[in-house]
Length: 119
Image (cartoon, rainbow, N blue to C red; front, side):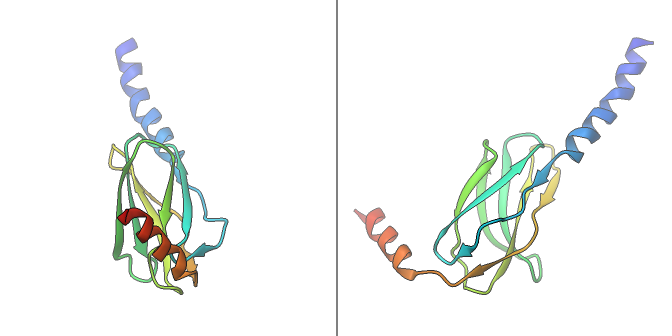
């Protein structure tokens, strides 16, 4: 009897974990070549992160994997591009954030960053 109850609880607990897996909305203005802090919670680590075009869902950038629930992305897309974060956890559950537009930023930031990295 205890085994039967335990087996019934597994799907229930799994659905609770998936239901609480969310991607937080972007609250600060995203600028081209600037840092964008992405945040999600729930699901099972590690998480695979992707930036997708909001217009057609095409992959713009694969950000790799993360074991933390935040990631700083450098918005290297053209100004005016609307994007969203897609997070896939280790169980295969996929969640997406709300779309947000990347606005015009300074190319000077990217140029300085490239110079610092080249040294």
